[in-house]
Every structure is written in structure tokens, then in C-alpha cells.
Image (cartoon, rainbow, N blue to C red; front, side):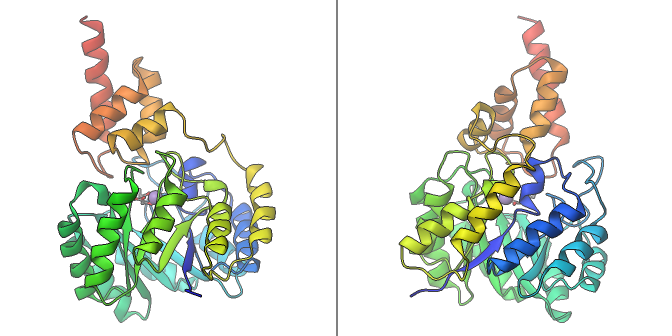
Length: 335
Ligand SMILES: CC[C@H](O)CC(=O)C(=O)O
Ligand SMILES: [Mn+2]
């Protein structure tokens, strides 16, 4: 039986779906049940990772330290992880996170910019942490470029390298091409993080495993940016049926999903706006920002997202959402 590592991101990527408003108590409840269910690792914090709580990305309900304290106290076996996007988070933020028992850091960069994560990965390794390189928006680069960037992460000391479908824009053959090549050429385990904007998250995650991924992400109820992530309960059911060992208890996760449903701000569906993200290849966390801008400037959120996809915008360019909305509103009024 092949073992697959599960990283749950309900308490980090899932924060996008609740405008970063989980309370520390809610996080502790969810983390405690993920621990009981035998999930290997939980990632915690603002949706944009360490340092994300800000005017630009939206303020979270509590501070990073409050979340980390609450979750670390709820965990017995499950490892505690954080996400760090260089430029949003800093090594100083990581030092603080380590005081709360963080064991793993995922250093996330745009798919062509792994070098922006060099100092963070080296710092993590020097500090005794597990370091995971996380290549965001991997659909935007061909497999050979993804391989080049994955090799950079490996050369900095990353223990695992993730291929991330941030926009939920990949088809199964895109996943197979990237994961297949990278897992053949690298010595470290390869991971895959999916989004469900085209309805393919669980299927693409299975494809990634079949192509060589050894670590995959899921979130309870699929909670996450855009149409959400690979729904953890469904993923575990699929992996059980496929004969993989994840160490996670399906029924305990199903029970947890009922509790998480009660905390959701809206159903985690594929609606026309989140579908537009996958269709256009736009950044997953642009969804709520685009909806707000659409309402404010009287334009269609899908048009904003399609234009952001055309312009190949990436995380950190949230200010472009307003620019695009204003341009669309001007074009509309001049018709
Ligand atoms: C804004 C960071 C982003 O949510 C990281 C991630 O999960 C992804 O790129 O999919
Ligand atoms: Mn994500």
C-alpha cells in the first residue's frame, strides 16, 4: 500500500472562504478533530500566510499568535505548519511562529520566482524546520520551466516541492505532465495542491498521485479560495478506494465536515465567478476582492476576472482588481 501524506489547509486556504474570520476557538476545535482523525499536518493562519492580515489582503479576526497558540494546544500528533510568501511574510514572522511549535513552513512563490524563497528555505532548514517549496500558479509555466524552478527549491534544501494549481485551471493532462516530470527528476517528494474552479480538484489530486506525488492537500468541506480546494473527506474516500494509505479516518472527517458546514459563510460551490477564475486562469484569492469591486463599480465580476487572467496577474497584484474594474466601468459608460 503506497502511503500518501495529507496536509490539511482548512485553517489557512479555508480562511479565504470566510474572509479570514475564523476565531481561535473555532480553529482549535477543527484542529483538534483533524488531529483525532489522524491527519498528518495542518496549516494555519491568514489565507495569504504569515503577515497576510493587512489592508491589502483583508484583516483576520485574530492575530497570528492567537491562532498558533490555540491550534498548537489542540494538537497531539499532527504537525503544525504555516505558509510564508516572501514579501508578505518575513523570517522574523517565522521566528515568532516557531515559538508556538510550528514544525513545517511552506515557502510559496510564483512559479517562475523560486529564487525569492531561497533565504526563507535556508533559514528554515538552519532552524531545524521542515521546509516545503510551494510553486504557485503552476499552470502559467510549461513543465520544463516548472522543473527548473522545482530544482532551485531542491538546491536550497527544500524537503518537499509542491506544484500548486492556485487558479484551479489545470486539466488532468497538465497535472500529469508537470508532476510526472518533476517527480522523475527530483530526489525529494513532490506534492500537489488543487483548486476546484473547474470541478477537477479531487480528480486532479488523484492524477497527481498516479503521476508520482507523495503529498497532497485537502480542506474540510473543500473550504478555500475560489471554488475551494480538494474536499478532504471526498479525497480520503477516493484514496481509500484506490488502495492508498493516508492514516486519516474517513468517518471522523465526515463528522467534522458537518460541524464545519455550520461555520461557513456561504456554500463552497462552483458558481459563475469562481468558474471564471478556473476558466481564465486567474488567482484564486481574487474572487471576493473582484466581487466587491464589481459591486462598487457596477460591472460584472466575471469580466474583471477574465481580464485579470488575460493580463496574467498574480498574487500581490490585488490593486489591479480595482484598476480593471474602473476601466471596465469607464468602457461601459462610454458605450
Ligand atoms: C494567497 C496565497 C495562496 O492562497 C496560496 C495558495 O494556496 C495557492 O496559491 O493556491
Ligand atoms: Mn490554494
